[in-house]
Each structure stands twice: as structure tokens, then as C-alpha cells.
Image (cartoon, rainbow, N blue to C red):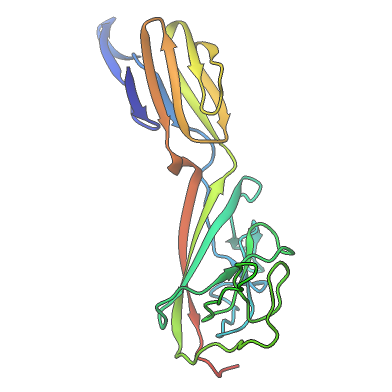
Length: 242
């Protein structure tokens, strides 16, 4: 039994045929054929990052990775938000040791979040949720609390983002000659496939088990195939500046 990662090159046999060499596929070969995902710049309160965005400490900043184009025609957000979903956003300001808190209000889309630059939220004792400095849908609100961001100089904030695919499409090349049983990740019953190509849309990573008689191969669809990430730097003005 042989185990290999998706995307590895085929095992080839160089056979002399009619005075020339012709490659012959000896083992199954797996490749991802769906389009690669991409993370473009987010929109910041409806304006493009790096163009018109104004980011000041304590302001309510709505970050959106919805698929689209800005007013200058540049692509923004996810390459395809019907297939990719933002799963994690982490923000670190250079003038702080703690990360800023990122909020996911219930009234925003799945690829949108809210950030108050410089704000690391305390935890509300009853719900265990972070407390925003401004009322947000789905979060507790302490009207008597301290909502001021500590004084800090102008700085850079790094926004790190990770997105997960709902599915990927793979193609399995099989040597000619006979039938194969293929067990796809997440399925319990193998399917019979003749030599040639088999395509499948997968919703989870894992092993693809290929069997022919006493021979068995395992092609691995790694977890990384379902994830993309990116990082964006943005300038944050000093406190006390409008």
C-alpha cells in the first residue's frame, strides 16, 4: 500500500514504442482542479483599504470580505464568497502587546466583522462574551463601563485572515486496464471506476483509498487544500485625532 499527497507527480514508465519513449501511468495520481481561492483587500466601512479608509483608535470599523470590486474597479474581499467563508480574523496593533478584539455582530454577513482599533475587550461575566465599547447586535452592553481606548501613538495594525472552502474539486487519474474501487473522504461505500479519470467534489479533507485486486493506494487530500490566509497592514492614527 502506498500513501501520497495530492499534487505529487505521476509515476512513469519509459517504454520503447516504435523507436521512441512514451510515458505510461502506473499508479493513481491526484490533483486539485477547482480554482484556487484568493483573499483581496477588505472594504473598510464601505471604502477601499489603502485608498479612502480612515482608521482611528476606538472608531467602529466594519471590515468586509464580501466578493466584489471597489469604485476603482479593483477586486476586493474573497475571490468567491459562495465557496469561501472567513473563519478567523486576528488584529495586532504595534503599540500594544494584546491583540485587539474582533466582533461578529449577528446583523452582519458571514464575511464581515467589526473592529475597534486599540480595544481589547473585557469579558462579560454572565455570557462569557467580550464587551464592545459600542452596542452591537448579539453582544452584551455595559452602559456604565469605561469605553475609552488607552492613549497610544500612530501605529500599524496587522490584520491576519483565514478562510475555509465549502468544497474543492479533485481529479483522480487511474491507469488503464480494469476497474478500481475508490473510497472518497467522508463516504462509507466505495464506488467502482474504470481506468481513466474520476472527478469528485469534496467537502472535507482525508484519504482517498484506491483498490484494484490485491493492490491498494492512498492519495491524501490535505487539510491545507481547504484553507487560504492573508495579512494586511493598515495605519492607525493616534488617539485624540479626528
